[in-house]
Amino acid sequence: MGSLESEVLMCLWASDDPLSPAEVRAAMGDRLAYTTVMTVLTRLWRKQLVEREAHGRGFVYRPLMSEAELAATRMHTDLRRSTDQEGALAQFVQGLSKDEAKALRRLIGDEGSRR
Amino acid sequence: MTASVRKHTRGWRPALRMSPSGEAAGLALIAAFAMTCTVIATAATAVSLIARLPLVASMFGWCERLAGSSPWWLGVPAAACLAGLLGGGMAVSARHLRARPAKDAPSVVVVDTAQVFAYSLGGRGGQVVTSRGLLEQMSPEERRVIFAHETAHLRLGHHRILWLADLAALNPLMRPLSKRMRFALERAADEEAVRAVGDRALVARTVGRAALLSFDRAPSHALSMDGSGVVGRVEALLSPAEVASPAGPLLASATVIVVACSLAWSQWTHLAGMAHHLCVI
Image (cartoon, rainbow over the protein chains, first blue to last red):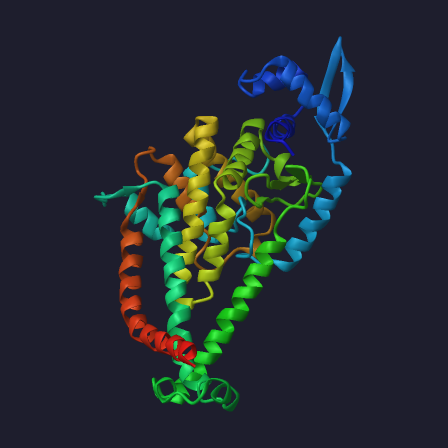
């Protein structure tokens, strides 16, 4: 999968709402041409990795779970079952001890679990 | 480990500064070197037993020098260690080879579960895997941080250093080094995320909140021991960028390695003798 495609996909996943090509372009820092963003979104749509709905005169796009992702999900379940805490994965969400949790809340403030 | 990071970021000003990426690379070299020494030292001690085995003796001829290089009974635990290292090495490598995305797999996978996790698989052209449960608890900016962090792991080829860290951990003496390697990798990816989103405090909050999310959901599974280093990561992110990883741990490791190597060197000559013997036949 191309790096542009993955960047655009991550952009869509990061957003709460469906995005138009212009919004995707803006979220990526206006680095790409509008036509490039449109091409990538269309390619992703054909691969069934995003779905789109009509909005005004164009479309807005949202990410979609595809067959490939379902296969990857299955792999994830297998990995989780076979690897332990310090397995082959470097987890972003690391486990905490009670003391660490206390220290963290002091450092970043207790914003709670809901945003 | 978290306590030692706090000590280093407060008060002690190291003469040598090093970026987390640099530290990860340096530790990887030390780990590779140390592992080689471990295998050589163990193999060379085990040779004294192996050389006496009737099958080996008949194949290569009785080699008094090798068989007598160390007491045969020392060769027993050495051979056991060697078998453990090789078997463990294969198990670790198999685990890591399994943790790769399928060919033509999408670069981003969001698993439809309430569980909270995010990780990367592979290197360049690899895959970021996260969960709906994590994403829906994070704001759009925080999600961008997570994606930037995981993408950095892929782009910088951290999966190889991770593999090395897990191999090194097979030797109990190298577990602290292995742990420090993992920490350095996370720090390096955190700094890359800072470069992507331009806000240290945001990355700090994301890392901390994600960990607290998981903790709040399953406090019964809380680690009772050392812990993970999340506090160290958040502290480093809340400090200005110039307070990079101190070179202290690196120098300490290097000292240990030099001592271990000098001990291994005496055994290396025995292995060299065996190689010469085999060629001479």
